[in-house]
Image (cartoon, rainbow, N blue to C red; front, side, top):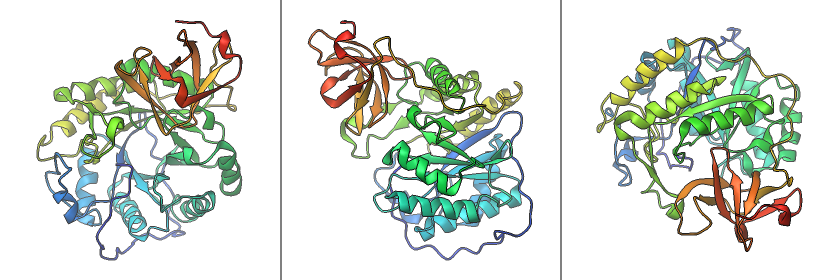
Length: 406
């Protein structure tokens, strides 16, 4: 869950590996690198939350080194190479202590960890200055740890909700902390406009897609046009219906493993630089594959099967070269830009039509057509085409009347 979950006070965590210890960093890259999003915000009280549908087979406190060792061992047994942990930065001492302990534990087990810098909280990384402080701490103190994830020799940093800041603000931040792109920055979501200052893209959630193969292929192509890294997503399912999100909530059934198999194979077929599973242990949104009370080891075992086949399939693409290129546009030169945080994409130009996707604030989508009165626009949302209500978006790049009417 990409919102702050209050943690009880955890015991201070002893750190065994310190920055500057002289231990050389190891590159995790193999023939096919598989990651999983990981969350370190659980304690004993969390598992009593009435919103949970399922719980781990062995409930744990995220600060427990024994639990970390068990989780890493389970992930390794399935062929997962690294966890990407949601991290709020040094201003959150508990979250940072857990992240650093996870790095230490991973080093002792030959595993890897990367940061997913979380900008979704009202309290942490809320300003460019606070985020700059977070990145300075990460780059100075953590990315040189032996277990920090590297790809083609560079530490990899993921970001959640980078849309909190403009591309220009990110350009200013990166110029101060990593002007030469000595690390790899992966943006989240349908955020093509950020490529250039960011080095790659990952769709955290693809559970909305009715055609995961087309979604992965389309987004791989979108990212390739910008000479960027493509991190493809696989998911076992999704259910955030208990989280109070109103119309934004939805359920994608697990289908006894069929959805996970479909999304994993779709991700693999898109020839990604890295493949990531959403998620290892996100119980509030029900996207976990960690052994649980309801599913046992079913999804871990399925991950083992899928990953083994994927890793037997050959080498991933090489590093991208060159800079970003302009985004896709229609012949009319128009793009639609949502002006609300999330905007439903519908199968037809009607509020009663089935929702096929959601698009997000300030991102840009090629405009393809309009209905007769201009109240609905047809867009390319990356995984297909659908209609958005014009009142919740603006357009740029040309004459709206030049669009064909459908």
